[in-house]
Length: 221
Ligand code: CDP
Image 1 (cartoon, protein in one colour):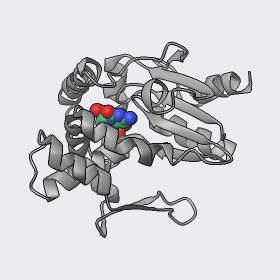
Image 2 (image 1 turned 135 degrees about the horizontal axis):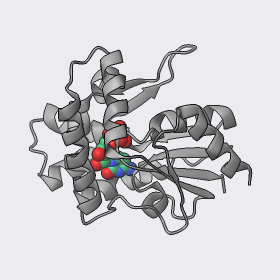
Image 3 (image 1 turned 90 degrees about the vertical axis):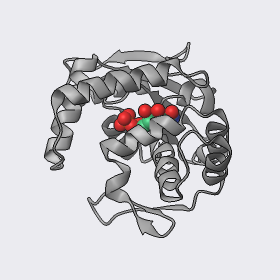
Image 4 (image 1 turned 30 degrees about the horizontal axis):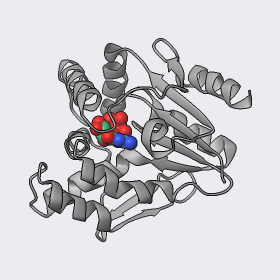
């Protein structure tokens, strides 16, 4: 069985960047499980399905027509949903909101399980999400729970979005992050919480390189 490193944590904890660096460093594949929830949200809107309609969304999730096309050197992976390039919109703040709405639906989560587990292939997988260590890869070789204060996460997200040219307010982002934390941690299925055997890393006040070094030290143990 191929090794899996499960990385979970709240919105803006720096998981995405950490997982990319880690996968690249180890030469392993990367599962961005949040992208799957984002895609179900986008597809739902596209098909005019209200985001609390569990049955049709579950069907969408099961048959999701998505391709991830590796970009040229240094370019990000392109995300193609039903033949349409959604690479930019899939990462936007508003799509994250759609994702967190469909993510509360137990049948949608179940429908995405097989697709996520199929990513576990040689030489190894870095899995980024909310429930990688608690549900999807319960027997992962290493589980990391990356967190940071809500204020710091809002700050980071703010800088990311400003750099991408999105216009946002810091206060609104902080409110968003708090609301998202609440929805993610209070939902009945796969609530956001560290697995019992997770290594918890608080990245408040740490740069991405500090976090990466800390995680590498744990990986080497
Ligand atoms: O960047 P951010 O962490 O906000 O986004 P993401 O990791 O793409 O996740 C977006 C939303 O999808 C989260 O707020 C969760 O509600 C949901 N999600 C989930 O429920 N389970 C996962 N494994 C990944 C994401």
